[in-house]
Image 1 (spheres, rainbow, N blue to C red):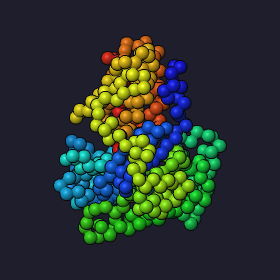
Image 2 (tube, helix red, strand yellow; image 1 turned 90 degrees about the vertical axis):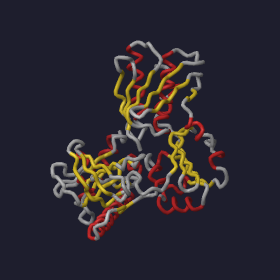
Image 3 (tube, rainbow, N blue to C red; image 1 turned 90 degrees about the horizontal axis):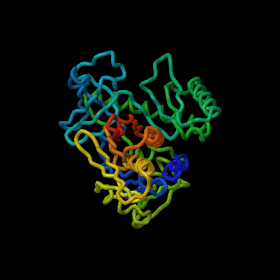
Image 4 (spheres, rainbow, N blue to C red; image 1 turned 135 degrees about the horizontal axis):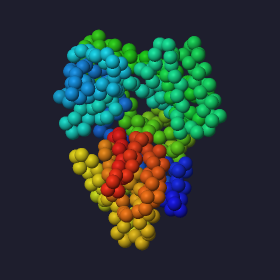
Length: 386
């Protein structure tokens, strides 16, 4: 496994992550100068994480799901039964419920939603719907490995739940909480509790007026930024004073990292050809090999070709694996992914390749699962879409 260092291992834990924002809706995130996310927001209120007052239209036993009206015209949102907080109880048609979008509408399909609301801050994720009256839980991000840090944060979390001046909800302490002060964490927890109270107040107002619609939404650009820990960014680059002011107001922690690039920001950051790259099927690798990305209705197939590369098959596969995991994030590829690597390879190299891809998957917020290798030697991956 010597090539781990050449193609991947030296990158783990050493990302130079930058965020580049053009205008108020176009965003590129790079790692070590290479794009890993590109999004253009249409400012739709039905984006992921937004919260709605919804009305149940019908329950479909075959799908084990509810269809809801959230105000998206003819499109009905889908609430799977296992995403319903009290899955044992049945709701009736025209009942109201509070839901959060987990998957935005696509083509003719409506949004997918959950009643397990999460409010995400820089250090804390509030879980107001997962808190019973008698039991609230403190959860620590699995990315915080240091035992003493986990113990310190757990004790802080317990003290928050014991504070008589604060509401009691379950919550998760995010990766960035490891380097935050107790005051910053407590302050953010308090602000998220206030936000939840305002969400409930607005929801009750909608129900009183028998209305459906959005009760809380966040700027889509900020939602993309917060997919990664704030501490992982070296720079946040913007080209408009409007976005500069919005970031200063909503994410003041970014102030020391803000950079104003008023002209041709994508060209200045060497990412101006990204759109053309994303339109292409073929991605060329440094060694001379390439990968071909083919999307179908059912799944995505990625083929690895040695092409002009003079490296051994195993080394090409390692290089290709690194690029495949980047392309999944960059193109927002979700669902089932089948990868056809160069073969045949011995069993040891195959297992090492799968393990390498599982390590690469750890930096993807969408938590792809590297299922394993089929009898035909294909690597299977499943990944959630944004």
